Image (cartoon, rainbow over all chains, first blue to last red):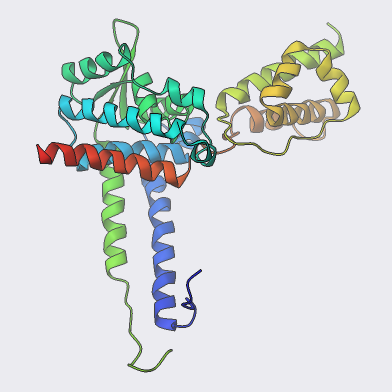
Amino acid sequence: MSDEDVFADGSQLMADLDMIEIIRWYRMVFTERLLAASASQDEEVLATLRFEATYQLAEFYYVLKARGIHAESQIKALAELHNGYIVELTKDPAKMSRLGLNKDRLLSAMFTTDTLPRLLQNWRERPGAFDQSNLARLLAVVMSAETCRKVVVACADAGLLLRERTSYGTIIIVSNGALEDILGQCLREARQRVASIGYEAPPEGKAS
Amino acid sequence: MSLHRTAGALIATCVSATAVLADVRGVRNPPAFTPTEMQLINKDARLIDANRSCPWQLRHALDVWEDMRGATRPAHASAQSVLCTQTPEDSGRASAEAALDLLKILREVAGQSTNR
């Protein structure tokens, strides 16, 4: 533990309290705006939109867009890094336990010689499109495949994602930009609020 | 159909419906069951399975069944609270550590692209 008394400086403390309110505000306003944007008012859809996993999904899509990850080669790199991460994770039982994951679930989240080509083919044919099971693989460390399916279904019902069945019987998920826009706007406003946190340094030699 | 078989079928339906909603991760303290409830559970393979895989959903379903039998509150309201508004135990939540790892992977993908 640090020797510094975090409660000693009143100005810093007020700024810290502003910060904690902003963190909470950010998560609250994201859910509020998501629900306000929902085309469905079905109770179950709205309840699912409130899940932490829905935020995780939105964050994933937001970062893909904000980081400019849109080329097929980038998706291939993403799958390879994902596989490498999974392999490392399976060698670390303590971390697996912390993350609430087991080896079987992790191994099923890896892209194989069967699933990787499908991931790339979907993206090639329609940039931004993930097979639902491949999307679940990419998000496996933050939610189960069943939660991913449920969240995607709710987002599609809410008009926040496109979810389409292909002629091959697979389900394709494509972003329509709504999740990214809502999260991005909330993030921007939160960052501006953080930037405006005032902190008056105490006069030299004096502690407040 | 006997009362026990009706109860078993109803509870199994409730449990399977809520189990679909549940995304259980980690371990929680198991719920308690009365000897009578254990007798009922042990008579139905589906309930035995539910007791192993999602004991809390089974606990809720038994509570609903008890409410319906005792008519202590509107049955449909009790059933609704289990079948429709039950959220997953972890609300689909994973650790912040995993979420941060995912952000780092995405940053690395973007970094690889710009370095080419």
